[in-house]
Length: 46
Image (cartoon, rainbow, N blue to C red; front, side):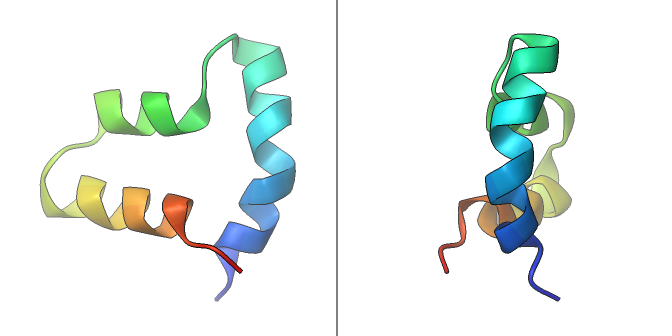
């Protein structure tokens, strides 16, 4: 599954709607191994 391709479109929409970077929100809300996994997916490049 290639979620990082979709994230490219979601990132600016999320910031416009909530006034905060999605990555920042993930880092604040999710910790541990799962948080690291989510941030790895978030930071993945094409």
